[in-house]
Length: 185
Image 1 (cartoon, rainbow, N blue to C red):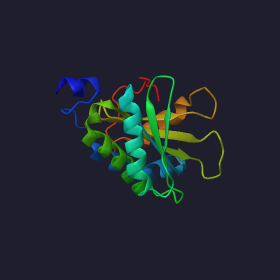
Image 2: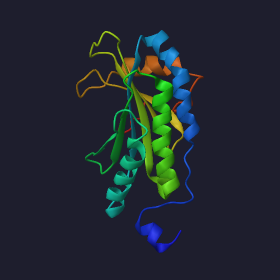
Image 3: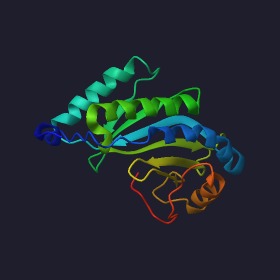
């Protein structure tokens, strides 16, 4: 790594395991069977890059993915300094959505920002649109594990839904070993 690379927050040695994201599509029938939730067609990928490299990275991502995706991805920043790329699939096809997320993550990794990837998530909801059945399956790049994050639409957590999702996904995804550990998503 050169001095310029370190200033640009590029890390050439860190390559995330992107293949784990494809296992989300195979886990969707378990979520539907056990919890009655279906994919919403929305997913996010979060990364943290600071300074001028952030503007350049966002512009490159939008230019590279806009031609491929039917709905242009949205890049936002949160209070923690992370950038989030949000992708949508109107037909709720989870295989295609995870492919989109892998494509964005791969572009970041090939640009030298593999170590900047934080998490990717896909959303599930009740098919009737009730607000009490919302779930995110989150893949943590740094840990190589998944965890379920459920919120009933307010600032409170739905711990029972998270634990039911964890039980349903046991054996199909590499889950976070500590079920009580909380992650900022």
